[in-house]
Each structure stands twice: as C-alpha cells, then as structure tokens.
Amino acid sequence: MSTLLLIALLGVMVYSIRLAGFLLPHQWADHPLVARSAHAIPIAALAALTIGGIRVDTRSDWLQLAVVATAGLIALRTKQVGLSVLVGLALLWIVSYFVP
Amino acid sequence: MLPMWIAALPIASAYALTARQVGFSLPETQLMSALIFSAPVQLNLVHLRASGATAMTILSTSIVLMLQTPFYGVSLRQRIPLSRTERLGAAGFLTDSAYGLTMAQGQRASFAYLLGAELSMFAAWNLFTLIGAFLGPTVTLLLPADLSAAAPLTFLAMLVLTVGSRRDAATAVLGGMIMLAARPILPGSLALILAIAIPAVVCAAWRTG
Image (cartoon, rainbow over all chains, first blue to last red; front, side, top):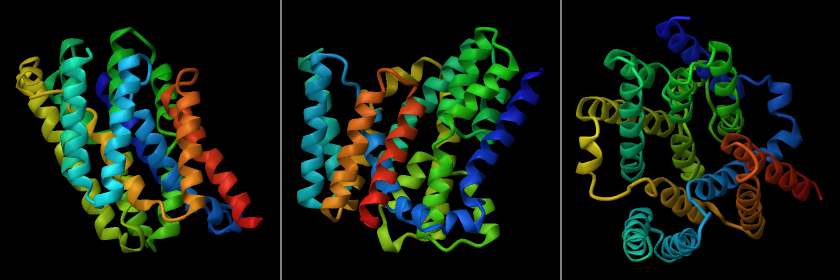
C-alpha cells in the first residue's frame, strides 16, 4: 500500500474513532449509568494523563514524582496553572541536573 | 494553552525528525500531522513503517492507540450541548490536551472553547512538525531543556482545580493508581482506557448507592 493511501486511511480511521463518542445513539448516551459515569471521566482522564506522562522507573523518577506533587500543591494553593507548571518545570530541571 | 504548546514542541519535533530519518518525505511528514493529528498514531506509523510492518498491522495498532477518545466524546456531549454539525467539527481535532483543557473549565466549558483549544493545538502541532522537519537534530539543541514534562504538569494543575468533592478526589486517586499499576504491564493506551473506565463505573455505582 502506498504511503499516501495509508496516511489517508489512518486519517479517516482516526476521525471515525474520535467521532464515535459524539455520535453514540441517544438511548445509550443518555442512559443514567452512562450519564453518571461521564461525570467521572474528566477527573479520571486528567489523573491518568498526569501519571502517564511521568516516568516512575528509577529512584530519580520517584524524586520527579515528588516534584510533580509539589507542583500540584502549588496549583491547589494558588489556583494558577501557569505558575504551577513553571515552578514544576524549573524544579524538574534542577532535580535532573543534580540527580542524573 | 501555552504549557500545552510548550509540551507539543519536543514531541512534534521528535516525530518529524524520526519520520525524515526513516525515509518519509517532507510533504508526507507534514501531511500526517495535518490529516492524522495524533502523536501516538503518527509515531506508531513511522516506527512500524520503518520496520516493514504491513498496513493492516499499522491500522489495527492505531485503533488501539485511539480507544480513549470515544470516552472523551461521550463526556463532552454530557457537559456541552452540541449540534450535529458541531459534533462533526469537534471530532476532527479532538486530543487529550483539548479535552482536558475544556473539561477543566467546568460549567464555563463551551463549543467555542473546545474548538479554540483544538485548533490552537492543531496549529501548534503542525508548525512544530514543520520546524522539526526543516531543522532536524538542530531543534533539540535549540531547546533550553526537556520540556516534555509540561503536559503532565498542566494536566495535574487542571486536575487539582477540577476536583471539588471527596468523590472527585477518590476518582482521581483511583484513576492515577490504576494508571500506575497498569502502565508497566499494558500498552499506554490500554492502561489509559482502564484508568478512565474503571473509576467511571465505580463513580456511577457510588452515585447510585
């Protein structure tokens, strides 16, 4: 299969998968169980995406996890996403400099 | 949006660099970012194509990599009233980042915000792909440090601002723990699906009880 055709096919496939949740039939999407579950999806997704983006394989990685937790505390206290990310990145760079 | 753009820079550059190194042309590299617009799927395509995998293998593994996005669609339509046309448009550029940013807006979430977040990520992703494809390895030398942590840090800050009750906190802890436990033994996308689906079901049961 040519590369261009493969890219086009993947484009269609990715769009279809993205669309699937939006086009779920009303009787399923509005089902009470689905509606109740949907409340938890963003919170669970944000937690999973946070953990998924952090490596926790070595000792220094666990140190990085502690730094990320600190950034979370800053977000909690200040309600400032930008400040939390900035401090978190700075701390991670410092940690990675001293603990390779 | 800024932290998400920062996080996209090293990933898009690395993708473009890898794609060019394994033999994709510049237009092909850019076309993938324009038509597919998914980092895991694009990287999967590049790596599998380089290793000589069949088209069927590439397509089937790509499906697995995208399976969390239907959850996002279901969740978004519960939060934001969307017309059929808006659903068709929103699905075109839906990513983890745009979803997370929109849901973190709480009751202020709207189709305009969702589409704005999606299009800004789309523009940034394609721009950084172009930069990576043109500059090659030089781009990694130009970056001041590893910026990839910007994405999880942003997700965490949004999570902290979204959690509003004990049930929310329990859901977040459960999702994080499942991700932590499942990631070493399952592909990232499957671990992500479990980490979303199980807390969602548990939360539904809790609300029923």
